[in-house]
Amino acid sequence: MKLDALQSPKYRRFWLGSIGSTGATQLYFVGMGWLVFELTGSALYLGLLGVAMAVPTILATLAGGLMADHGNRGRILLVTSILAGAALGVLAMLDLGDWVTVWQVLVIAALLGLISGFDLPARVSFFPALIEPHQMMSAVALNSILWQGTRMVLPAVGGVLIALADTWIIFALCTVGFAVMARILLSLQTPDSPQRGSIKDRGLGTAWHFIRQEKLFAVLIAMTWISMFFGTSYVQIMPVFAQILNTGEEGYGLLLSATGVGSVLGTILVGRLQSSPTLGRVMMGGSVLFTLSLALFALATSLAADWPFAFAMACGCAMLSAIGGSFFLISSMTVMQLAVPDTLRGRVMGIHSITFSLIALGGLVLGPLAELVSAPGAVLVGAGAVLTSIVGFSIAFPRLWRLNGQDQKLYL
Image (cartoon, rainbow, N blue to C red; front, side, top):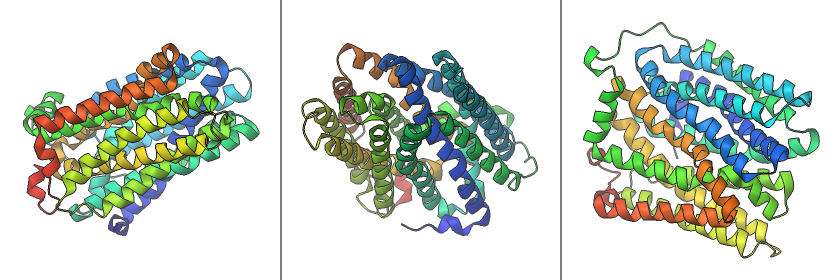
């Protein structure tokens, strides 16, 4: 996979600075999940934590997309980084002083979700201005490697840190991470740009019309939303699987890290196939692999939980599911970034970025379902929903399997 986007000095600084904020996001996800489970011992509360993060993010993302298209994207990112660091600093102090309650965690999670809703559209629409068009595939892959690479390493590190020092150290490190990102963004600030687009296309309705008109956009976004809400959201109840497998904090971190390893491997592999004449089959095959691996994960943690190699099996299945998920996600995001007009980029890609909030929001379904049936049973239900959507979209839109990476026009 070529990494030619790093040849752009501005993008290189942005990418390096994003290690701080993206790493902080991965860590506070781990820290909050374990802290809530430690305070309550309930999968239901883990689901509520997901809702607290996701609902404000989704609502704010719609306004954030508008702001990104009509405001200074670099300045928006600077403000969101400062606010996120401040919120996590408060949580670190509450946790260190043993004053923290589950409701305080949920409120701060909601505040971070609100901030993220303005951050995500600005972030996905800011980096294309730092690169040349031919570097887009590289930049999308690098952004994914950054996200998934930190997910590969930091959850395991976070699990060890929690075991050694407790969760407050996680939130303190997150504060530092966002401070680093803010410092880098100061060097990337640009003057306000002239108003993008005409008065007629300033609303969200224009973005929704574009997505409906470009049916491939509508299908790819819908498939991504379904896979995240019903499939990838199993990471929201991962502490329950660590308990089933009797692995504690370290096992919790390693299970999350396994998904990061798989995502990085999937990103690297699919980066070599972007110009393949069988790109559609690679992309859709990845979604099938994702679903089947989730089902195997559920079976491994249910039927084989007492086996000597149950934990290794669970990690392997989590890794395979992430590889398949990356095949679909990276290919579909590249298609959309290349095709969307810059005047609509913040809103359209902001709508797509709701994807990542749906991981947490899916905990609202999987959490109570895990309490009612079992955590493996909840994952099996989610995998079934994703597989049903794949079959349905494949029948209604068979062109998905015929996308040709050597002909960019087929993307439109």
